[in-house]
Image 1: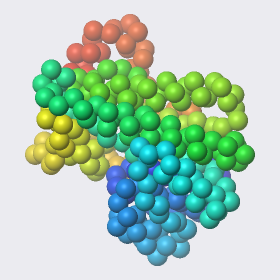
Image 2: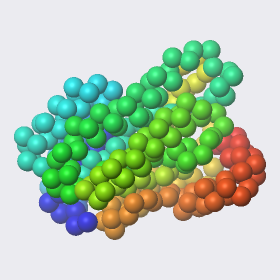
Image 3: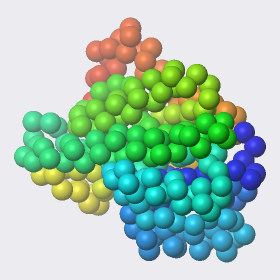
Length: 266
């Protein structure tokens, strides 16, 4: 895909992967529409993009509300007249064994953001993406293809969106392109500090650092953009995540031991 002149809507654009992708795509000639819940953050990123000659504007959006997703898409069409890329970067995680949870209500927040919110955005944008023969890009995770210790609700929400996208791809039969980015541990995001703990509250900052097997944020987003340019259907970051389905098929018990060890090391 030639990115110059394209229009991209990005959810979760106020921080982490979404923010990095917004700035980098704008530098490549993409008009970016930034969606997140914090207006002040959106304004800061929009100003940074415009100061370097890029095109962007932000729309305060809570993707768990379908009417706000429709407004996001409607305003984008009113402003730019088309949508070529829908990049789903909004997400929230958890970090606790299921049996330790005292307040299970945050599982709804996981599903509302990671699954239902993404579906809201896709439903609103789909006619325009079909018209432009565009692409849906999802920032997914290894937890979408296998269970992960301490991530039961998160894995469930990611399995859900993975299954939805796989089915939608079959139904549309080439009318829209799909790219699913399966990510491991990424350094430089706030996913861990914003993850839910056993009491249903955000964990906040911890003293634990990512392991040597984690990937730097900027390297991660560079690879996602290259996958978009190359019209890939999947990208695994790090690459060894692509081995998970095969190892699970033949050595499932071994894989689960390795996952549990990896989670403890993080």
